[in-house]
Image (cartoon, rainbow, N blue to C red; front, side, top):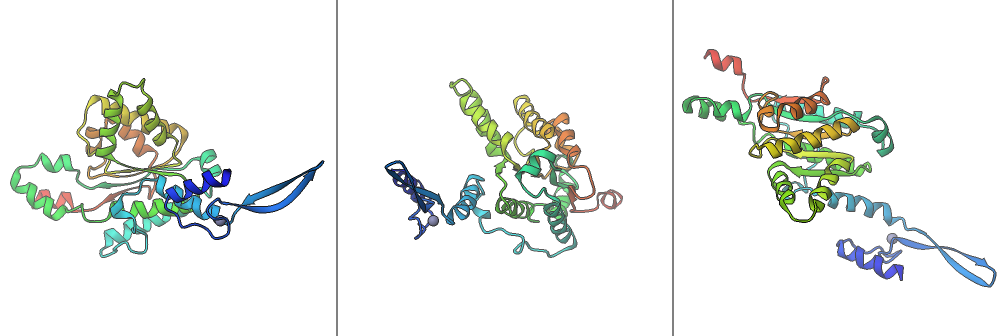
Length: 278
Ligand SMILES: [Zn+2]
């Protein structure tokens, strides 16, 4: 009976069925006789581990356009991109060996910020703005690609990774908050981001700030801070302007757990000081 429900579940996930266990993930091990009854004892099939990986991958909610992103196919055309790549590899190498070690010891956050944040650019007069935006061009440098590639490596090593995209995620959370279900949807979503081994937060600070969102940023960032569980993030804001978007308390917690030589990196666009003198 078990085998039937299991195989349905397996085919629903769209995995190719294993010829050894027909997708049940268990195979016959040996028989045991107790009194007059003989029982078949089963053991996990060798395909289970492989399937676990693919389930974790699906549960991570990797965006469609990054399904093929990996470290090898990240473009390293300039010094900045080579450095981003290097830092990512260093972070991966310093990561705890397994879930137990991560839960026990925790680890740092890892982030890419802008040198000159969006909010700062918007405050400029229109003439300077377009020139800086053009030179700055912080958008096509593959921050998300690189971090998704990092997340995939961590999934392969057995970690549960949860990927959220700031605007969509914050909207969903705010909608869930308004739902008339005693907070059930809201708490379920909140628990997913709090309990994931690794939270990848794409484009943090992009959502339009409100007081309610500010409270939520703080709750998530502070809770993971206390548990020493990592947030991998990227933003088009800089270390200061990010505070205007997610709140000062959340921002300082986020960066504090990223303090260190290679944990939070400013991805460079232009030299701001040179620009001001020009
Ligand atoms: Zn199998």
